[in-house]
Image: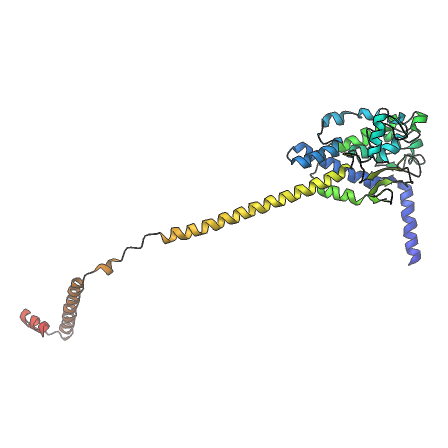
Length: 361
């Protein structure tokens, strides 16, 4: 039995080696599904205010929304100099946007004064950039560029070459081609609504199940999406072993810096509660209307006019007596006629006064 299990394990390993490894395959697939479904909901323009704001944040990174076609048209300008920004991949993909970061950016001082137009959880498209852009020296596709994939794409589709987006991009002046290729071939297709309608809550629930809890006493509510081993102060740097990933912080102190999926989950739950409440109110209204119609129907039934008495009930006693006398006369005449018929001998009928006398007696 053990030999058989070992055999199948080796067989599976060989099959995977022959086909190559698709890094972050499932994470990319479910995140892309969430984004496509959010885009479909955005285009309907028929949701409540709170949910609309959450959908806007999911797609554009802000509650007010934006121009979807403009976003699809090309790489957002904030990424143009990402490779030239100090430690950009660490700060944009691996560290939280805390209140102190905002303060230091405003004053332009300190280690955290790095420009941060993006941060983990800024928006779903940005998280795709963190999850799917190859890192230093095309890692993790540097060894098998024709077999291994990242987010379903071979190395050449993600910019190729020996460069990539990492914490060392500023030193080597590389990464722009890879960032642009990732936007074009990975993020952009996910900004087009799905061919088949999906339930946004269902897609988001599947996404949340993919998050790995990496919380620590000094960093509570920390969750990772994608491959990588975080350190005490760095994560998702685009270099081994930190990985190509997104590290979310669901307890950031900066205003409006919670991950997009936190707001989206809350808005969807609130929308479902409001919908259930409205359905309950409609059901109660229908019940009340039905109850009101029932007494009205009974009242109408009771107010109907009584049926007219039959003709027989209106007959006078005199009419009844007259008919009885007629029937008696007929009954007397009939037997007489019968006797006459059967005997063949004519029988003289009594005079009318005799009949009258008989009746009087």
